[in-house]
Image 1 (tube, one colour):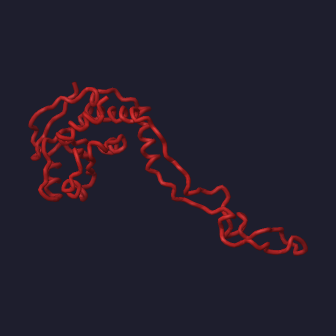
Image 2 (cartoon, one colour):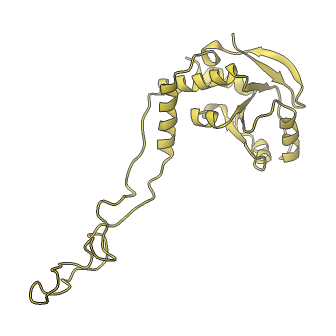
Image 3 (spheres, one colour):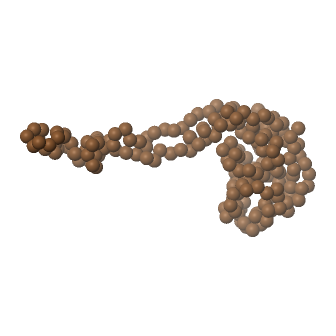
Length: 209
C-alpha cells in the first residue's frame, strides 16, 4: 500500500497516511503518459501565423502591362506570388485546428500513473492545513521552506483559494491547482506535489475507477 507523509503548516511531520492503491499504486505506461501530454499541448496550441494568398492581397486587378510587345515577361497581376508584395503560396493559415482527442478513461489512467510515480519516488506530501487569513507571500514561502524542498512545487487545493493563489505568485517554481483540474502535463512539470488533506479526498472521488 503506497504511503505519504503528512505535515502541518509549520512544516512538522505529524503522521503517515495510506494512499488509495488504485490511484497511487499503479505501474507507469510511458506511451500512454506521452500521449496524454501530447494531447494537452496540442489542445493548448493556437494557430497565430496567417498569410494571404494572391486572392486575399489588396489590388492587382489590372494587368501590369500588355501581353506582347514590351520585351518583358508576361504577367497578369502584381499580386502574383513571384512579385514583391504579392500573395504567399502554401503559407500557414490561422484557421488550422491542432486539437486532439483522447478517451477520458485513458486520460484518467495516465493521470493516475503519474500520481503513482510521484508517490513511488517520494515526490508527494500531504499538508493537513494551509489556511491563510490574507494573501501573504512571506508566510507561504516560510511554510514551503520547512517542507521537503524541490526546485518546483505544485500545490493541490480542494477549491480555489484566492489568498493562497495570490501568495504564491511571487514564489518562483510554485503553482496552485484545484484537485478537479489536475492534468498530466502540470504534474510532470513540477518535481514536488503537495496535496492539502481535503483535496486528497476529492482526488480519490474524482479519479477513482
